[in-house]
Length: 201
Image 1 (tube, rainbow, N blue to C red):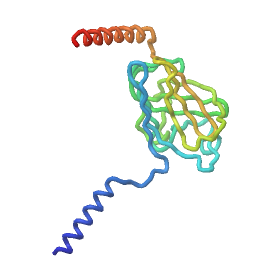
Image 2: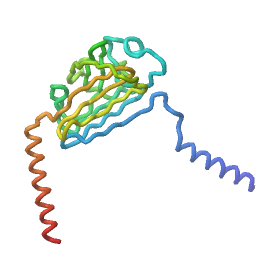
Image 3: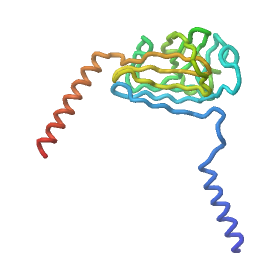
Image 4: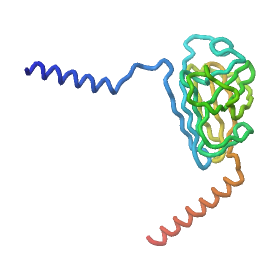
């Protein structure tokens, strides 16, 4: 009986440990979140590796829609309306896709953000697309990467790079003048609150 109880305890311990671990993903999922203007932007995507393969023009064919990552489609969420490469996009979540060529990438935001890859991609669901130049990197980017780089408190760049290629999409609030006015008012309120706290103390 004691041996049976001991075996059950060992099995239970092993099961609980197994729940905390998983098989390493070939293309690990990454979530990037960045404060942007008065809200934030979040990107959820799969990160494939180069692994000695020829990427653009072969693994990722030129002129065909690509999921901008691996596995399920890349999702991007805007907390406020933004100017995406010169075009207005409302707050919400979108699927991010790319149609690459050697010198330019068409970066697309699509209403369908829940599909696997780009197998059911429907251009009729596109919200906006912008074409941006591709720059050659000095050093190879082994793992596909999407980053959000702020340039000031109300603007930034969506940076996409893999292998030897990099492209950027400029981001700004859709109504910059209104955002600046609101921001200035909020700063005034913060100052009033701070001054009031000092007076009490």
